[in-house]
Length: 255
DNA sequence: GAATATGTTTAAAT
DNA sequence: CATTTAAACATATT
Image (cartoon, rainbow, N blue to C red):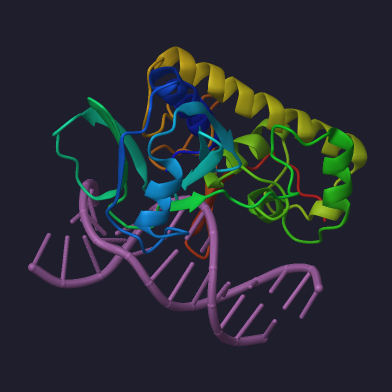
């Protein structure tokens, strides 16, 4: 499941490949998670040019003509840019640009397509100001990790990066949001910016043309297959429901 | 082959 | 209303 940095790189690369290309045809293979039916998608989008592709929260957005197409990859969604007539598994939505076809695929059929997604006031993780972030945390008395993951509070952070950000800032995932001292909140905000931006840089470097999937090679603590960090700290794993947290003992718990 | 893990959103429950 | 829990998804991996 790609997260914010993966999506940011993907958006840039897809834009590079498809900007100013005209959408020739559109097929909605599975409409269960689509906001409108195939005909409506076709009527509003086909025949128009891709103006831009960008990331919004955990969504990818395609600006096509005067309309916006939002794609949410959910857990296992993938984008595949293939040659015409090339087969892909589990297609959800197919966008034809002449000889190139862009597919949204998902074996779990959860990836969602939205036409002209509603504007939201929820700040994006890379856009929120330090002050605003502090005010948000002051209002929350749940685990800091829950707040970071709550898309209604702040958009774009998933399970893996939440662990990485907390590790970087030295805060335990079990800390209660509104008990974290102001200077530590500041540090957390800084970690959030640097961890996400560094990840974007590293993915860009490692996979300059990446259009799909994810890259977690550089993660420091969210490591299901390892029990120690590079520094030799023991990685603690615990579960909340089916969601696992990875952290080390030195991460401070504020309660 | 049969359990199991997987992570996000949404709906339901507390 | 805020917060927590569970269901859904269907495959790859163990």
